[in-house]
Image (cartoon, rainbow, N blue to C red):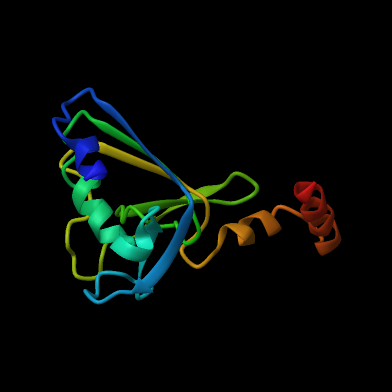
Length: 154
């Protein structure tokens, strides 16, 4: 319902922000629209009793209805968040700053884009990573990472 509230009455010129920081997961994809075979999920506070929210549901609720002239800014700080909005393209950036676009359109050819608006997503990691994986890659040695872990526990 909160996702529906966000997009309700959205008009050209509107700028929407969706932020989720918590837990994310993956579930086997049953519809065949995921290249890796998994749906990415976010875990709201009540996910153990009410279920996780699938990337397909997020896309259908706040991405596809986004009208021309409106912008959605999504900040997703969870594990397995690479394609959690199921956007058709994913920007990959190397440490040297070079970047390229990966086509993530479903193999079935189903439309996963907006209704003309712009949807942008900053996410914590790739689909096959946990957030811990991305912290670990920032350090050049495991010794450096161990020092970081000890400091963060203080």
